Image (tube, rainbow, N blue to C red; front, side, top):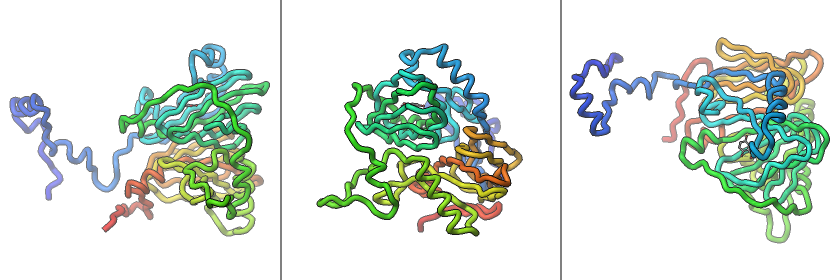
Length: 356
Ligand code: GTQ
């Protein structure tokens, strides 16, 4: 088998023109481009967005653009490898920093892409999802999965900022991305996280478990943080102190496409992660972390965010020798697992999955 395949220039121009007129393309000049050897071509570039850069520009957007003219006042964290216009962090992930000012309201809508919010700063805001009013506090994860009504409001005194993570690039690529607007939601009493207050036990009214795909919409940071600290204390030799946000009734990933995790780096810890197929987003909740991949390294301060392409081994280091660092992780692993392309490599070796 030769590696030197025929080029487009090797073909007579009138032949290529005849093909093109009929919407036909010869494969062989492009075969190595779409099926490269050993490692996929990735447009996603390692990219770091600092909160120090984002916050003043987002607050400026609050002065320049009223909420009525924005609907969602968001600065998108765009990966230059995909071109900024595409507004994507990776092939399947979209990231945005959203600002809501006191008294503002971002009206109710629903859409096909799945979203989550990771609350960065400020108090008094809430997101209502299908009638459940979810308070937004630092580090909370709030789901707004595909098709569920959601709106944001703010009764507090200071600006509130959060990170949006959506699978919008995938939905757009699939030509299934659209939204519907709705009226302000009536809120119902109760908070989902009080139904699922402890791991290992779930409510079972007479008919059994709820069977809802999204029984839990708000994952308070205080609970995820406590889970990480308990895990770290219970397993002093465990290197990968990580929890995954799941459906508390089934243990399945919280959403269908993107995966969400919280990771703790012990004081002074360096954690080497193998190359895996999904792209990964790291966002610091507390402390500081150095993220190193291939030839790049980023020092992440609180509320900083970075994106790392798939198939790239990554090392995470706590920047402090005295306090833990807490990192929110979003990745494309549920999607890759469902598609059968999820891969963990040891060293440089491809370990192409197969389901024979
Ligand atoms: O808050 O509903 O960053 O619909 C992008 C699209 C946020 C939202 C985004 C959205 C939202």
